[in-house]
Image 1 (spheres, rainbow, N blue to C red):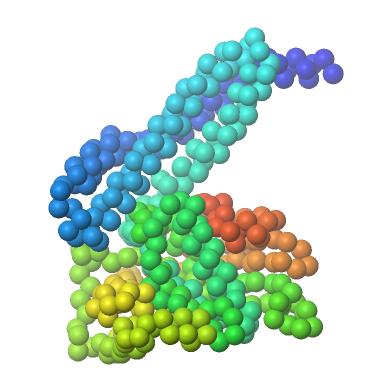
Image 2: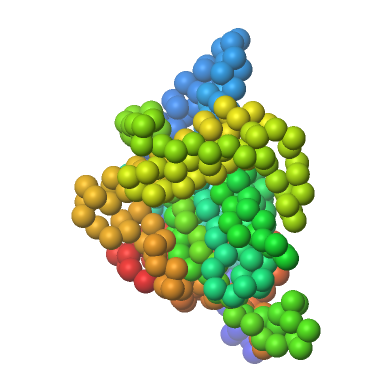
Length: 376
Protein backbone atom coordinates (compact mmCIF):
# COMPACT_ATOMS: atom_id res chain seq x y z
CA UNK A 1 0.00 0.00 0.00
CA UNK A 2 2.95 2.35 0.60
CA UNK A 3 3.75 2.99 -3.12
CA UNK A 4 0.14 4.03 -3.79
CA UNK A 5 0.17 6.42 -0.84
CA UNK A 6 3.44 7.98 -1.94
CA UNK A 7 2.33 8.37 -5.56
CA UNK A 8 -0.89 10.12 -4.48
CA UNK A 9 0.96 12.67 -2.33
CA UNK A 10 3.79 13.53 -4.74
CA UNK A 11 3.44 15.71 -7.83
CA UNK A 12 3.84 13.35 -10.77
CA UNK A 13 5.20 14.35 -14.21
CA UNK A 14 1.80 13.37 -15.63
CA UNK A 15 0.22 16.14 -13.54
CA UNK A 16 2.29 18.82 -15.20
CA UNK A 17 1.88 17.21 -18.61
CA UNK A 18 -1.88 17.51 -18.20
CA UNK A 19 -1.58 21.18 -17.28
CA UNK A 20 0.62 21.88 -20.33
CA UNK A 21 -1.87 20.11 -22.59
CA UNK A 22 -4.69 22.26 -21.21
CA UNK A 23 -2.61 25.38 -21.73
CA UNK A 24 -2.01 24.44 -25.37
CA UNK A 25 -5.73 23.79 -25.95
CA UNK A 26 -6.76 27.05 -24.30
CA UNK A 27 -4.18 28.97 -26.32
CA UNK A 28 -5.60 27.56 -29.55
CA UNK A 29 -9.12 28.51 -28.40
CA UNK A 30 -7.98 32.07 -27.59
CA UNK A 31 -6.50 32.28 -31.08
CA UNK A 32 -9.65 30.92 -32.73
CA UNK A 33 -11.89 33.31 -30.80
CA UNK A 34 -9.47 36.20 -31.42
CA UNK A 35 -9.57 37.65 -27.90
CA UNK A 36 -8.19 41.04 -29.01
CA UNK A 37 -10.92 41.32 -31.64
CA UNK A 38 -13.48 40.28 -29.04
CA UNK A 39 -12.34 43.07 -26.71
CA UNK A 40 -12.60 45.58 -29.56
CA UNK A 41 -16.10 44.32 -30.36
CA UNK A 42 -17.12 44.83 -26.72
CA UNK A 43 -15.83 48.41 -26.82
CA UNK A 44 -17.80 49.14 -29.98
CA UNK A 45 -20.99 47.55 -28.65
CA UNK A 46 -20.62 49.34 -25.32
CA UNK A 47 -20.36 52.67 -27.15
CA UNK A 48 -23.42 51.81 -29.23
CA UNK A 49 -25.36 50.71 -26.14
CA UNK A 50 -24.68 54.06 -24.45
CA UNK A 51 -26.23 56.13 -27.24
CA UNK A 52 -29.09 58.13 -25.65
CA UNK A 53 -31.71 57.33 -28.30
CA UNK A 54 -30.81 53.64 -28.60
CA UNK A 55 -34.20 52.47 -27.29
CA UNK A 56 -36.10 54.49 -29.86
CA UNK A 57 -35.70 51.33 -31.94
CA UNK A 58 -36.52 48.58 -29.47
CA UNK A 59 -35.63 45.64 -31.73
CA UNK A 60 -32.23 47.11 -32.62
CA UNK A 61 -31.57 47.98 -28.97
CA UNK A 62 -32.30 44.41 -27.92
CA UNK A 63 -29.94 43.10 -30.58
CA UNK A 64 -27.15 45.42 -29.40
CA UNK A 65 -27.57 44.67 -25.70
CA UNK A 66 -27.89 40.92 -26.35
CA UNK A 67 -24.73 40.91 -28.49
CA UNK A 68 -22.86 42.93 -25.85
CA UNK A 69 -23.94 40.63 -23.04
CA UNK A 70 -22.95 37.56 -25.05
CA UNK A 71 -19.53 39.00 -25.98
CA UNK A 72 -18.81 40.04 -22.39
CA UNK A 73 -19.78 36.59 -21.11
CA UNK A 74 -17.60 34.92 -23.72
CA UNK A 75 -14.58 37.06 -22.84
CA UNK A 76 -15.07 36.46 -19.11
CA UNK A 77 -15.32 32.73 -19.73
CA UNK A 78 -11.96 32.70 -21.52
CA UNK A 79 -10.28 34.97 -18.98
CA UNK A 80 -11.55 32.95 -16.02
CA UNK A 81 -10.21 29.74 -17.54
CA UNK A 82 -6.84 31.36 -18.17
CA UNK A 83 -6.73 32.53 -14.53
CA UNK A 84 -7.69 29.09 -13.21
CA UNK A 85 -5.04 27.47 -15.40
CA UNK A 86 -2.35 29.80 -14.06
CA UNK A 87 -3.45 29.07 -10.49
CA UNK A 88 -2.84 25.36 -11.08
CA UNK A 89 0.94 25.90 -11.16
CA UNK A 90 0.77 27.45 -7.70
CA UNK A 91 -1.53 24.72 -6.40
CA UNK A 92 0.80 21.95 -7.55
CA UNK A 93 3.76 23.78 -6.04
CA UNK A 94 1.96 23.96 -2.69
CA UNK A 95 0.89 20.37 -3.19
CA UNK A 96 4.50 19.26 -2.84
CA UNK A 97 4.12 19.99 0.88
CA UNK A 98 0.38 19.44 1.38
CA UNK A 99 -1.37 16.25 0.17
CA UNK A 100 -4.82 17.85 0.49
CA UNK A 101 -3.80 20.74 -1.79
CA UNK A 102 -2.37 18.23 -4.27
CA UNK A 103 -5.66 16.34 -4.45
CA UNK A 104 -7.51 19.64 -4.82
CA UNK A 105 -5.19 20.56 -7.69
CA UNK A 106 -5.85 17.27 -9.46
CA UNK A 107 -9.60 17.72 -9.06
CA UNK A 108 -9.27 21.25 -10.48
CA UNK A 109 -7.38 19.88 -13.51
CA UNK A 110 -10.37 17.65 -14.29
CA UNK A 111 -12.79 20.56 -13.79
CA UNK A 112 -10.78 22.94 -15.97
CA UNK A 113 -10.51 20.29 -18.68
CA UNK A 114 -14.29 19.85 -18.74
CA UNK A 115 -14.82 23.62 -19.03
CA UNK A 116 -12.16 23.99 -21.74
CA UNK A 117 -13.70 21.12 -23.71
CA UNK A 118 -17.07 22.86 -23.51
CA UNK A 119 -15.57 26.17 -24.66
CA UNK A 120 -13.79 24.42 -27.52
CA UNK A 121 -17.19 23.52 -28.97
CA UNK A 122 -17.83 27.23 -29.50
CA UNK A 123 -14.87 27.39 -31.90
CA UNK A 124 -16.51 24.65 -33.99
CA UNK A 125 -19.46 26.91 -34.80
CA UNK A 126 -18.04 28.40 -37.96
CA UNK A 127 -20.84 27.66 -40.42
CA UNK A 128 -22.34 30.37 -42.60
CA UNK A 129 -25.32 30.94 -40.31
CA UNK A 130 -24.05 29.53 -37.00
CA UNK A 131 -23.72 32.95 -35.36
CA UNK A 132 -27.38 33.79 -36.04
CA UNK A 133 -30.36 33.76 -33.74
CA UNK A 134 -32.69 30.79 -34.25
CA UNK A 135 -36.32 30.13 -35.09
CA UNK A 136 -37.47 26.76 -33.74
CA UNK A 137 -40.65 24.92 -34.71
CA UNK A 138 -41.89 21.82 -32.88
CA UNK A 139 -44.64 19.63 -34.36
CA UNK A 140 -46.43 16.62 -32.92
CA UNK A 141 -46.18 13.64 -35.25
CA UNK A 142 -47.35 10.01 -34.96
CA UNK A 143 -48.77 9.01 -31.61
CA UNK A 144 -52.02 10.88 -31.10
CA UNK A 145 -52.54 12.56 -27.72
CA UNK A 146 -49.17 11.29 -26.47
CA UNK A 147 -47.41 12.93 -29.42
CA UNK A 148 -49.12 16.25 -28.72
CA UNK A 149 -48.14 15.98 -25.05
CA UNK A 150 -44.57 15.05 -26.06
CA UNK A 151 -44.37 18.09 -28.35
CA UNK A 152 -45.34 20.30 -25.41
CA UNK A 153 -42.69 18.58 -23.25
CA UNK A 154 -40.07 19.40 -25.90
CA UNK A 155 -41.25 23.01 -26.07
CA UNK A 156 -40.78 23.35 -22.32
CA UNK A 157 -37.40 21.58 -22.54
CA UNK A 158 -36.01 24.09 -25.02
CA UNK A 159 -37.47 27.08 -23.19
CA UNK A 160 -35.92 25.82 -19.94
CA UNK A 161 -32.58 25.48 -21.77
CA UNK A 162 -32.80 29.11 -22.87
CA UNK A 163 -33.65 30.15 -19.29
CA UNK A 164 -30.57 28.33 -17.98
CA UNK A 165 -28.44 30.41 -20.34
CA UNK A 166 -30.39 33.64 -19.88
CA UNK A 167 -31.29 33.72 -23.59
CA UNK A 168 -34.35 35.86 -24.42
CA UNK A 169 -37.09 34.06 -26.33
CA UNK A 170 -40.29 35.02 -28.11
CA UNK A 171 -43.05 32.49 -28.78
CA UNK A 172 -44.62 33.40 -32.11
CA UNK A 173 -47.41 30.86 -32.32
CA UNK A 174 -48.79 27.87 -30.40
CA UNK A 175 -51.44 25.58 -31.84
CA UNK A 176 -53.01 23.61 -29.00
CA UNK A 177 -54.31 20.07 -29.43
CA UNK A 178 -57.91 19.35 -28.46
CA UNK A 179 -57.33 17.02 -25.51
CA UNK A 180 -53.79 17.78 -24.31
CA UNK A 181 -50.48 19.13 -25.51
CA UNK A 182 -49.82 21.05 -28.71
CA UNK A 183 -50.03 20.43 -32.44
CA UNK A 184 -47.16 22.84 -33.07
CA UNK A 185 -45.29 25.82 -31.69
CA UNK A 186 -42.78 28.30 -33.12
CA UNK A 187 -40.43 30.42 -31.06
CA UNK A 188 -37.35 32.55 -31.55
CA UNK A 189 -34.15 32.37 -29.48
CA UNK A 190 -32.67 35.86 -29.39
CA UNK A 191 -29.02 35.09 -28.69
CA UNK A 192 -25.87 34.97 -30.83
CA UNK A 193 -24.98 31.44 -31.97
CA UNK A 194 -28.43 30.13 -31.03
CA UNK A 195 -28.75 28.64 -34.51
CA UNK A 196 -25.29 27.05 -34.41
CA UNK A 197 -26.06 25.40 -31.08
CA UNK A 198 -29.63 24.33 -31.73
CA UNK A 199 -29.32 23.29 -35.37
CA UNK A 200 -28.13 19.83 -34.25
CA UNK A 201 -31.55 19.36 -32.59
CA UNK A 202 -33.46 19.21 -35.84
CA UNK A 203 -35.00 15.92 -36.76
CA UNK A 204 -37.43 13.45 -35.21
CA UNK A 205 -37.54 12.88 -31.46
CA UNK A 206 -39.06 9.67 -30.05
CA UNK A 207 -40.67 9.09 -26.66
CA UNK A 208 -41.36 5.68 -25.09
CA UNK A 209 -43.38 5.61 -21.87
CA UNK A 210 -46.48 4.29 -20.13
CA UNK A 211 -49.16 6.54 -21.57
CA UNK A 212 -50.83 8.77 -18.96
CA UNK A 213 -53.77 8.97 -21.39
CA UNK A 214 -54.34 5.19 -21.62
CA UNK A 215 -56.67 3.82 -18.93
CA UNK A 216 -55.04 0.40 -19.42
CA UNK A 217 -51.55 1.85 -18.72
CA UNK A 218 -50.03 0.47 -21.89
CA UNK A 219 -46.64 1.47 -23.24
CA UNK A 220 -46.86 4.07 -26.01
CA UNK A 221 -44.32 5.29 -28.55
CA UNK A 222 -44.85 8.79 -29.90
CA UNK A 223 -42.95 11.17 -32.14
CA UNK A 224 -42.36 14.91 -32.49
CA UNK A 225 -40.42 16.82 -35.14
CA UNK A 226 -38.05 19.72 -34.49
CA UNK A 227 -37.10 22.25 -37.18
CA UNK A 228 -34.41 24.89 -36.59
CA UNK A 229 -33.82 27.86 -38.92
CA UNK A 230 -31.42 30.81 -38.83
CA UNK A 231 -33.02 34.23 -38.45
CA UNK A 232 -32.87 36.30 -41.61
CA UNK A 233 -30.74 39.45 -41.58
CA UNK A 234 -31.04 42.46 -43.85
CA UNK A 235 -27.95 41.36 -45.78
CA UNK A 236 -29.71 38.18 -46.91
CA UNK A 237 -31.93 40.03 -49.41
CA UNK A 238 -34.88 37.70 -49.17
CA UNK A 239 -37.60 39.51 -51.07
CA UNK A 240 -41.21 38.37 -51.00
CA UNK A 241 -43.68 39.62 -53.58
CA UNK A 242 -46.84 40.64 -51.74
CA UNK A 243 -48.84 39.30 -54.70
CA UNK A 244 -47.50 35.83 -53.87
CA UNK A 245 -48.75 35.98 -50.29
CA UNK A 246 -52.18 35.13 -48.97
CA UNK A 247 -52.86 36.87 -45.66
CA UNK A 248 -55.53 35.48 -43.35
CA UNK A 249 -56.46 37.11 -40.05
CA UNK A 250 -58.28 35.36 -37.22
CA UNK A 251 -58.91 35.59 -33.52
CA UNK A 252 -56.08 34.45 -31.23
CA UNK A 253 -56.90 31.49 -29.03
CA UNK A 254 -55.44 29.59 -26.10
CA UNK A 255 -55.73 26.02 -24.79
CA UNK A 256 -59.02 24.32 -25.56
CA UNK A 257 -60.04 27.08 -27.95
CA UNK A 258 -60.44 29.63 -25.18
CA UNK A 259 -60.42 33.14 -26.65
CA UNK A 260 -57.55 35.33 -25.50
CA UNK A 261 -58.22 38.24 -27.80
CA UNK A 262 -61.45 39.91 -28.85
CA UNK A 263 -60.08 41.18 -32.15
CA UNK A 264 -58.85 39.42 -35.29
CA UNK A 265 -55.17 40.09 -34.53
CA UNK A 266 -53.64 36.70 -35.31
CA UNK A 267 -52.10 36.40 -38.78
CA UNK A 268 -51.51 33.43 -41.06
CA UNK A 269 -49.29 33.89 -44.13
CA UNK A 270 -49.30 31.47 -47.05
CA UNK A 271 -46.56 31.74 -49.69
CA UNK A 272 -48.52 30.59 -52.72
CA UNK A 273 -45.61 29.46 -54.97
CA UNK A 274 -44.12 27.17 -52.30
CA UNK A 275 -47.12 26.42 -50.09
CA UNK A 276 -45.19 27.48 -46.96
CA UNK A 277 -47.54 28.54 -44.15
CA UNK A 278 -46.56 30.64 -41.12
CA UNK A 279 -48.77 31.82 -38.25
CA UNK A 280 -48.23 34.31 -35.44
CA UNK A 281 -50.58 35.30 -32.63
CA UNK A 282 -48.32 36.38 -29.75
CA UNK A 283 -48.83 40.14 -30.20
CA UNK A 284 -52.05 42.08 -29.67
CA UNK A 285 -51.47 44.06 -32.84
CA UNK A 286 -52.25 42.58 -36.25
CA UNK A 287 -49.37 44.58 -37.76
CA UNK A 288 -46.89 43.22 -35.21
CA UNK A 289 -48.06 39.66 -35.77
CA UNK A 290 -47.73 40.10 -39.52
CA UNK A 291 -44.18 41.45 -39.12
CA UNK A 292 -43.17 38.49 -36.93
CA UNK A 293 -44.79 36.00 -39.32
CA UNK A 294 -43.01 37.65 -42.23
CA UNK A 295 -39.65 37.24 -40.45
CA UNK A 296 -40.27 33.51 -40.05
CA UNK A 297 -41.42 33.24 -43.67
CA UNK A 298 -38.19 34.91 -44.80
CA UNK A 299 -36.17 32.39 -42.77
CA UNK A 300 -37.99 29.51 -44.42
CA UNK A 301 -37.49 30.98 -47.91
CA UNK A 302 -33.82 31.68 -47.15
CA UNK A 303 -33.39 28.04 -46.29
CA UNK A 304 -35.16 26.98 -49.47
CA UNK A 305 -32.94 29.24 -51.56
CA UNK A 306 -29.80 27.86 -49.95
CA UNK A 307 -30.91 24.34 -50.71
CA UNK A 308 -31.45 25.21 -54.35
CA UNK A 309 -28.14 27.08 -54.68
CA UNK A 310 -26.10 24.24 -53.21
CA UNK A 311 -28.25 21.50 -54.76
CA UNK A 312 -28.18 19.59 -51.48
CA UNK A 313 -31.09 17.84 -49.83
CA UNK A 314 -31.83 19.43 -46.47
CA UNK A 315 -28.51 21.31 -46.39
CA UNK A 316 -29.58 23.44 -43.42
CA UNK A 317 -31.94 21.16 -41.56
CA UNK A 318 -30.64 17.64 -41.97
CA UNK A 319 -33.55 15.36 -41.26
CA UNK A 320 -35.96 18.26 -40.95
CA UNK A 321 -38.08 17.15 -43.91
CA UNK A 322 -37.96 13.48 -43.05
CA UNK A 323 -39.87 13.09 -39.83
CA UNK A 324 -39.36 9.33 -39.87
CA UNK A 325 -35.61 9.83 -39.51
CA UNK A 326 -35.08 9.58 -35.76
CA UNK A 327 -32.26 11.44 -34.03
CA UNK A 328 -32.99 10.98 -30.31
CA UNK A 329 -34.92 8.60 -28.08
CA UNK A 330 -36.37 9.46 -24.69
CA UNK A 331 -37.20 6.24 -22.83
CA UNK A 332 -39.16 6.41 -19.57
CA UNK A 333 -40.25 2.76 -19.46
CA UNK A 334 -39.12 0.03 -18.88
CA UNK A 335 -35.88 1.88 -18.03
CA UNK A 336 -34.79 5.53 -17.87
CA UNK A 337 -32.55 6.82 -20.65
CA UNK A 338 -32.16 9.57 -23.25
CA UNK A 339 -29.90 8.66 -26.16
CA UNK A 340 -28.82 10.52 -29.28
CA UNK A 341 -28.90 8.00 -32.12
CA UNK A 342 -26.25 9.83 -34.16
CA UNK A 343 -23.58 10.47 -31.54
CA UNK A 344 -24.50 7.66 -29.10
CA UNK A 345 -24.32 10.24 -26.31
CA UNK A 346 -26.71 9.16 -23.57
CA UNK A 347 -27.75 9.96 -20.02
CA UNK A 348 -29.85 8.07 -17.49
CA UNK A 349 -31.80 11.03 -16.15
CA UNK A 350 -34.65 12.01 -18.53
CA UNK A 351 -36.12 14.40 -15.94
CA UNK A 352 -33.00 16.58 -16.04
CA UNK A 353 -33.03 16.59 -19.86
CA UNK A 354 -36.69 17.59 -20.00
CA UNK A 355 -35.81 20.35 -17.54
CA UNK A 356 -33.37 21.84 -20.06
CA UNK A 357 -30.11 20.02 -19.32
CA UNK A 358 -29.17 19.77 -23.00
CA UNK A 359 -25.60 21.04 -23.20
CA UNK A 360 -24.04 17.57 -23.29
CA UNK A 361 -26.24 16.58 -26.24
CA UNK A 362 -25.57 19.85 -28.06
CA UNK A 363 -21.79 19.58 -27.62
CA UNK A 364 -21.78 15.97 -28.80
CA UNK A 365 -23.92 16.90 -31.80
CA UNK A 366 -21.72 19.82 -32.79
CA UNK A 367 -18.57 17.67 -32.62
CA UNK A 368 -20.33 14.91 -34.59
CA UNK A 369 -21.34 17.37 -37.29
CA UNK A 370 -17.85 18.87 -37.44
CA UNK A 371 -16.41 15.38 -38.03
CA UNK A 372 -18.40 15.22 -41.26
CA UNK A 373 -21.25 12.92 -40.23
CA UNK A 374 -23.93 15.04 -41.84
CA UNK A 375 -26.45 12.32 -42.52
CA UNK A 376 -28.55 10.38 -40.08
